[in-house]
Amino acid sequence: MSNPAVKKTPERKCVGCSEKKAKNELIRIVRLPDEKGVELDRTGKKSGRGAYICPSAACLKKAKKRLEANLECKIPDEVFEKLEKEIEGEHS
Image (cartoon, rainbow, N blue to C red):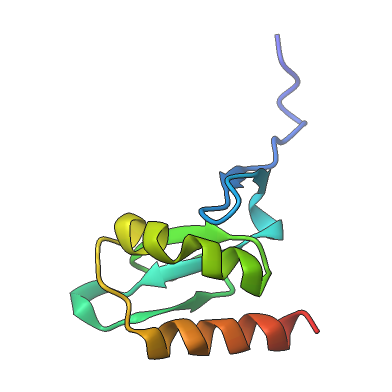
């Protein structure tokens, strides 16, 4: 029988490099409800369809096509540029 006091750390897979990591090590990108756009979700609690990437611009670039598929929407280049700047600013 497992010990109920031991909590498992939730894991998610980066859509860029496909590595599984602890959820809190990744950045969630969320498609907001009602076609209101795509943005970073630092809290991991925003409403909408989400996908996870490593906190690196390289993973964001690799993930471009897969993010659009996972979030089920076309993501404009300006949004990717903004996300890339936010990620670089967060982790520089």
